[in-house]
Amino acid sequence: MATQSHSLSYAGCNFLRQRLVLSTLSGRPVKIRRIRARDDNPGLRDFEASFIRLLDKITNGSRIEINQTGTTLYYQPGLLYGGSVEHDCSVLRSIGYYLESLLCLAPFMKHPLRIVLRGVTNDQVDPSVDVLKATALPLLKQFGIDGESFELKVVRRGMPPGGGGEVFFSCPVRKVLKPVQLTDPGKIKRIRGIAYSVRVSPQMANRIVDSARSILNKFIPDIYIYTDHMKGVSSGKSPGFGLSLVAETTTGAFLSAELASSPQGQGAAVLPEDLGQNCAKLLLEEIYRGGCVDSTNQSLGLLLMTLGQQDVSKVLLGPLSPYTIEFLRHLKSFFQIMFKIETKPCGEELKGGDKVLLTCVGIGFSNLSKTLK
Amino acid sequence: KKFPESSKVASGQRLGSENLIDETSDVEDLLKEEEDYKEENNYSTETSGALKWKEDLSRKAAEAFLRQQQATPNLRKLIYGTVTEDNEEEDGDTREELGGLFRVSQPSRECKHKLDSLDCSRFHVEAPHDWDLEEVMNSIRDCFVTGKWEDDK
Image (cartoon, rainbow over all chains, first blue to last red):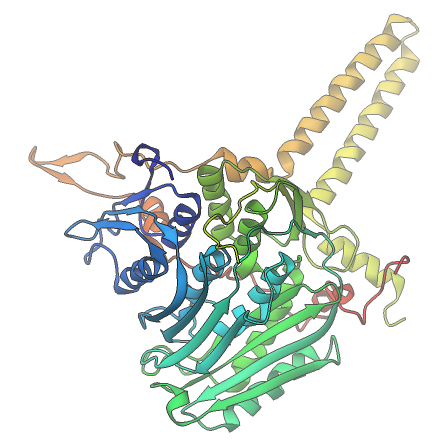
């Protein structure tokens, strides 16, 4: 592992997760200073502290130092250990916030990760568990991470502000990742979705489905939106409803969109009809952006390409999100990997906006802590 | 077919990238310039003039190439060229003194916004299209299996 002198230094709390994740994978310590230094309430928030605790649980021998005001964080990563873990996530952010990072780390554990996460399953900010299940898991499968134990399950649904949801995630470990050539997005053959409602009338979900279908039916007939109404202890502590939509293409690419109702007592009330229509339009926007990986999972795909065997990997993406752009910069500083980036103008084809082709040679990362059996 | 060819082409051009439009206009400019030079050539009967015309053409081509390079957003430069290092010295303050004792601390809004903004991977749609319009709907028509397929498939 790297020595302390190789530590990287950053400022501000933005992109905290990707910095800590890349630090863990590369073994380089990071120091993050001036975390909300000029804020009225300075330092790390609860949800970030919870994220750091989670990292501590899945690794062995990590050293974490936080100063008294919480504005400076020093993280020296240990080894990824995995195993059976339980974690209570902060209700300020949804489980998706934590799960996104776990998806990056889970394939490289010593023992396969089996984790129970409790908190908010769907909110308006982060990608929900449903969307990650439908988009990130197939993406990991492209890299050769597959098996019976590969699973993400919503046991209980929890909406903000109360939370009370529960998710089970288990992921097998792999020694090496397969390089990928995801250059053909294919054509969308079907659209699937989940309209969920908890602690409100089950009719809400049906109203969402009807309005979403009214827009999407103009493009493709193969649409099925499941209605998911959880009751009793499975419905969490707060009422709410929402919709997540996923478009699957002939080549196995998944594009997603989602919307959730405002948390109880916050923001303007949303009609289920409006929510359904707006979510369908968001999916059309995502299809317009296009690419082989949807905009939320761009960084996950690029990370797995970087960590692949020493071979060329290619991926065609829609426009890069600000999060992905920063992630590319971080990949450069942690792994010295620079991608070849080519813009592919859409031209006369009726296939949405301009695309970006990213090419890299993997660093040949192999999971040395994986036990041989 | 559902749509007449002409409307397809028109919508394609309308929605076509700006790069493409830039490119075509560049080519047109070049062609125009070429024509101008040819005309000049006709007036001058010297042989060195022809050589001069050729020299100029390569320079023009180089300039046009550079112009085009600048017009298309160079993503590589955008991503790797302007890496935002945290500058310790500046600290985002403007050193303005008040009564020779206090300093007004005014962190530049942009800098602060970026450093401490929400850590979220979702890519929000900033300028949504109007999906009720036929033209906009047609722009993604071929992304679906119900759209037009390439000849080789």
